[in-house]
View 1: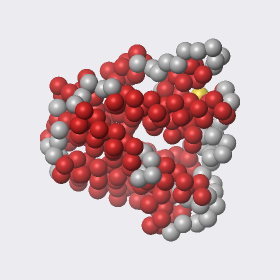
View 2: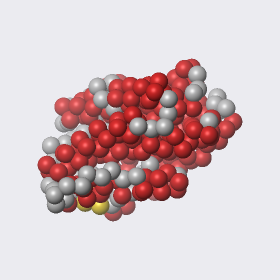
View 3: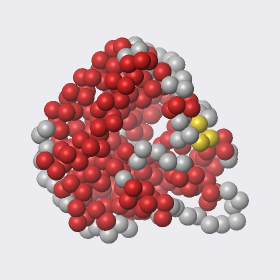
View 4: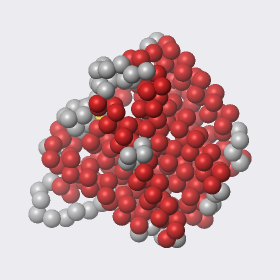
Length: 289
C-alpha cells in the first residue's frame, strides 16, 4: 500500500481561498494516517485480476478513502459519538470547530464522486462505480446503518437487528470496495457478487474486532477515543467479551473458506491484506478473549 499512500499524499484535495483554516482542515484527517483498508481491498482485486488497470484505479481508491474519512469525521461529531481522538490526532471539531468538521465531511463526500467521474476509465465503468458507492454508502448501507445506530442508542436490539445495523453501517462499504475493484477489473457479475458477500463477512468481523478493542484498549493504544460504546448496540454489550471473540473466530473460519473459492492470484492477494484481521481477535486473549 506504499504506492497508494504516495498517490494519496500527492493528490490531496485543495480548496484555496481566504478562509483561514478550511483548506488545512480538508487535508488534516487524510494525512493523519489510517489503515487504508477499503482502498486496499479495491486495489488488491484490481492488482490481482487486471494489473494493467491499477493506475486507473488509484483515483477510485482515493475516492473510497475520502468517502470513508468523511464518515469518520461525521461519526465523531458531538451530535453522534462526541469523540476527541481519531487516528491518533484530535478530531476535526476539537482541532477546529464543529461547523468546519461538518463542512469538511460534506466536501470529502462530494469530492469522492468527482474523483470517480474524472478517473481514466470507461464511462460505463465510472457510472457503475458511482452507482455502487452512492447506494452502499447512503440509504442502502452506511447512512442507514448510522441512523439506526444513533436512533436505538440505549435500547437493546435483537441479535438479528444488531447484525443488520453493523452490516449496513460497516459491512456494506467494505463489501462495495471489493465489488468496485471487480467492476474496474471487468470481472463477471457472479464473481462481483461473491466478492460483495465475502466483504459482508469481513465487515462483520471488522466490527466485532473494533467493539472488542473499544472494550479492552485505551485511547492511546487504539489511536481513537475508546469506551464510547457503553450505550450502543455493540457486540460486546450484547453478547459479552467471550462470546464476541467466539463469533469472531467463527467469522474467521467462514472467511478462510470463502477465500479458498477465489482464483489463486486473488486468494493470495486478499489473504495477504487480511492477515492482520484474521488473527487480531486471538491477540486479545490477555484482555479476556
